[in-house]
Length: 124
Image 1 (cartoon, rainbow, N blue to C red):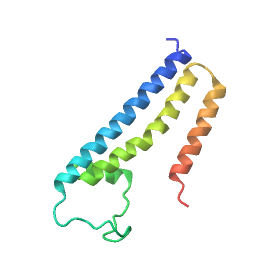
Image 2: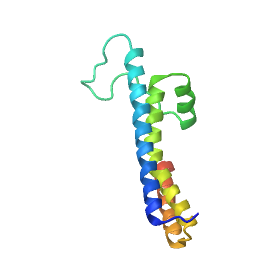
Image 3: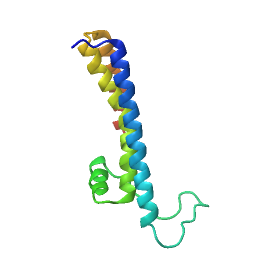
């Protein structure tokens, strides 16, 4: 099977569309569930940073809580999907360039992937 630049660009574009749509749908679903689950007095957002602090969760906790139907975790899962979309695009491009035997662009894609992962995982 011959991979051309045009086929690779179309496949990457479609993958990006699906990733963003899926992330938006998950966030939307989580938002609807959140609005249905939240009861009690309205939160006061006039002072930013006051109130109960939510702790950040690891991705595995977010996924586990999302599958238990927790609305905030579903929203967080959608945001994780949105963050993962450009990373998947770089991986997809690297594999496509590898199949095209364009090793210069494979190396460039892997460098971009390393920078993305470093910036995502490096805690200052």
